[in-house]
Length: 212
Image (cartoon, rainbow, N blue to C red; front, side, top):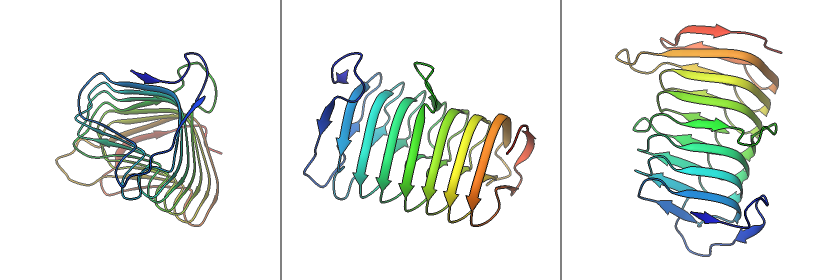
């Protein structure tokens, strides 16, 4: 476990000066919590989990990275709770297709649990399968607000505001994927340059409720 003071959100600041990630997790069962990470490596991400199965990132602020805020790379069972990501050179959160079982939620019941603001690409891009995303706000995204390319994604209480492209994109890729995107409960989308929501390329079995 890497943490600031227990019970105090993000009260220790890490200011990396190298060219790589601030934290690169390469083993399972690692927890990072109660930290602020400012200025991730010049050519790296804020946090990368590479085979970092069952990692937990909780009550962490990530600011001013030239690449991705949190990169889930070939990892299973990762949980992100109460994370704030701002001013990223690429995506705020990106989970690749080699990953599965990602959860973004609210560990302490606060809302939003995770906030992504100001990215040059998607605020959140998920290629991973079996994903649960709850209580998330994505704003000022230079591309899509929330892009789901993986199978079996559940979205609950999502706010997307101010994007230069689509608000939420449910996008099937390969016909071998069992593409089931279930969108339930409160979804609020505003101020998008293109569609508020698009379902395309074999993204089937979508259930869409309570959209504003």
